[in-house]
Image (cartoon, rainbow, N blue to C red; front, side, top):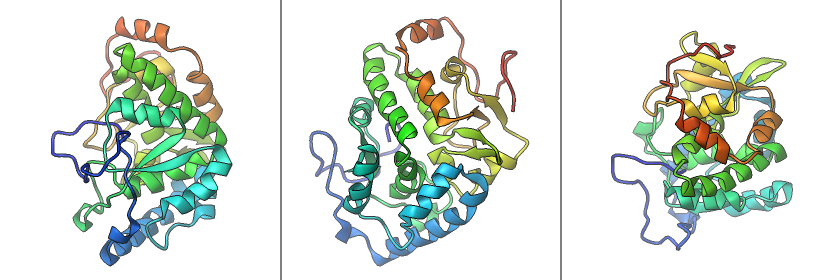
Length: 275
């Protein structure tokens, strides 16, 4: 939800509170938008059994929000007791410090607007479908939910250390576009993939991208693309690995990273362990 764009921001920021939250105002969703949600949900839910990790599939089946755009309050009634997280409605993209502060306090920002029908296959900024379908199910997983909180706290600190670019890369290659190795083979847990009709099969089946075993500093050295399918994916072996990797203080890591060159989004290096 944090990010930058070259075009005017989507969403109505005129009614937001100081923390950038707004009311969901469920009555504003039209019947056409409800229908679009159902079609988006039907497409993605048909794909995830083959490509998503079991944790995501299990929780998605329990939530079952394919009948229409979800009410945030109804999801929060289940999410808060499960992992201590709550969803907060926001107009769209947020400043980095606002985004990190929400995560650090176990609040996940969800955009209230839905894409247009002509954006069915591709959207530049995250909308309510991306945020809900891609992110919300794994907020019910305790280990992954703890990772997101730790990431938020790390982001608040990184801002003061001028290290936000490194944290953005970590978020991109894990929360948005991460792969996980499972007994069934490679699967995804990344929200950017899970909410995409095209990248979901591509990330697992295509022979074009690099798939590299997760290494924290390697990830934070790596540039990424925002307007194409990813050229590199990083593969974890468990959510615990992800949480453990982000538990230490990152301050010495940032010092090390400043002495290392950035790595292009499509590049491999000698130390990479390819999957």
